[in-house]
Image 1 (cartoon, one colour):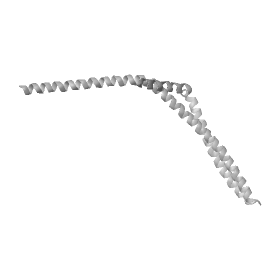
Image 2 (cartoon, one colour; image 1 turned 90 degrees about the vertical axis):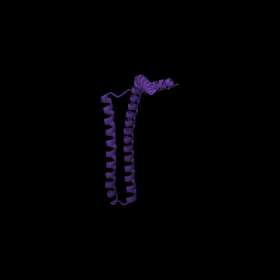
Image 3 (cartoon, rainbow, N blue to C red; image 1 turned 180 degrees about the horizontal axis):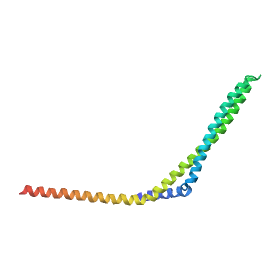
Length: 152
């Protein structure tokens, strides 16, 4: 049963690794840079929209339909915020994809190393069993020696 579980984990990890191979250094860096760039663009757009709203609000007070002018200025701000949100969402999607690929690569490495780890664990278990056996033999010898001394 355990073997089937290990086999299914190995198969799943291999499938994930084949879907998204680990990044080459340059490709990963380019994606990270793009995500940072998109985040910065989004922040810039938000700042720009806020400043523009302040300027337009001041200009609105000089017009006849102040409320309508302010509403339009706010609407422009909201549209710019929406554009910024979309850029930031794209950056988050890129970052999420990077993390997913890293996790798949770790799972694939883990699956590849699993037989070696199991062999090491089995060897360690055998060493532990032998050490326990030797300890039991020493205890038994000491009991026999103590019994011989008491018998004299």
